Amino acid sequence: MPCPRFTITGPDDFGALASLLATREEAAGDVIPKVEHILADVAARGDEALVEMTRDFDCKTFDAACLRVPPADILAGRDAVPAADLAIIEEAAANIRSFHERQKEQSWWVPSHDGTMLGQIVTPVDAAGCYVPGGRGGETPLISSLLMNAIPARVAGVPRIVVVSPPRADGTLNPYILAAAAVCGVTEVYRIGSAWGIAALAYGTASIKPVDVVVGPGNIYVTTAKRLLIGRIGIDMIAGPSEIAILADATANPDWLAADMLSQAEHDPMAAAVCVSDDAALLDAVCAALTRQLADLPRNEIAASALGHYGALALVPDMGVGMQLINAIAPEHFELCVADPWAVVGQVRHAGAVFMGHHCPEPVGDYFAGPNHVLPTMGTARFSSALSVSTFTKKTSLIAAAPGYVAAHGAKIARLARLENLEAHARSVECRFKA
Image 1 (cartoon, rainbow, N blue to C red):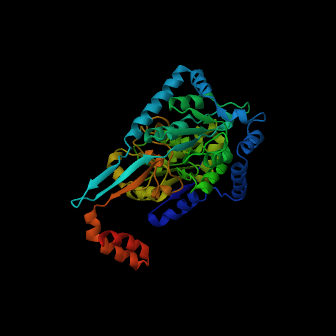
Image 2: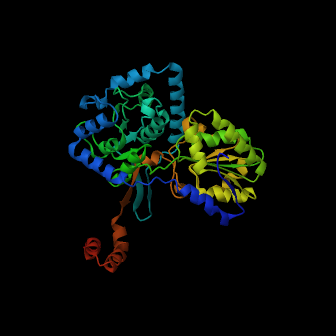
Image 3: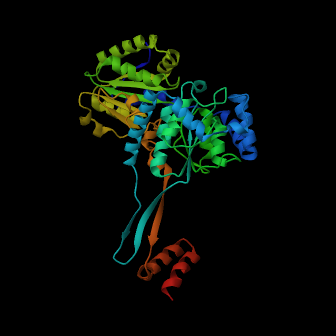
């Protein structure tokens, strides 16, 4: 059997599956002091520390001159990519841009009858850093990660967007990463990775000016660095291992469901893939399909480990209980593989992204459709949202009080201040209406 089976009669039975998924959280353990040392080293020694660590882990001949990718090399990378591939990247980028354009918020203000004006000013941050993992020595470039992080920043109006990514053994970046940067209009790219790349973005060095917000996926070192730097920089989220949950009825195709589960299981041995159904025969067929498809999957060892430890086939008495279970899991990716997903979607309360119907597998959103694929994991969809244009903006309150407002309400404001024993606050108001 490729993954565990669960029979669930109601919410009281959710605990076993929820506990299984909760064990996936990566324990920082001895990583924290290591990352703290890296952050302190970069803060103290800047470029020198970046060069030493990059030599140790990525490229033995690396030096300070290799840190920044010249803008001409970014364009050369774009030109090195086959035209057909570049066209696909450009089309995906256009879809992502179009979706995120709809997320833009406008500044607003509302006048009152007494002349007071209240409002909100929406402005982008000055600089954003996008971390792009190298991917198996640079040979599996995470093009989509760059697009999903840089394009919302561009739509938000961030004037300076920086990309960092670890170099390959020869000191270069994969041309597909450079092509994606060019498509996004990014001209500032650095060949650094891991926790020291995050530290450089946060603290700045002689070669790299600091940024305000850092986004992008990475390993436990990258994630821990982002966690430790919250407060100095804004971040997108603390991301855990990838996950998918599927709610399927008897109309679903078991081969497709198995393929969708494997699309997440191949990411990481800690990825979770759960299929929930009220049809026992369908779950039996999915189990058989998983076994068949695993056999010839290139990353079958990773996928098999993920399924064996964190996969699940869950039988529920009806779709209502199934939907309750999905909301309890609060999955990163949720596929609603039922005959009429629009009749059910209103019951979704907690999910990073919802994929509707039998013809909308998770990779449609991962790569091409437009919505962001940087999503909350590990149940944090209960309170968190996908990366968006808002990640790169901040909101400033606007208060314009007319003289009549202070005269009318100053005594009440002063009383509230004195209830908090803040006399200077009270006097600040009173000196205006007592004059």
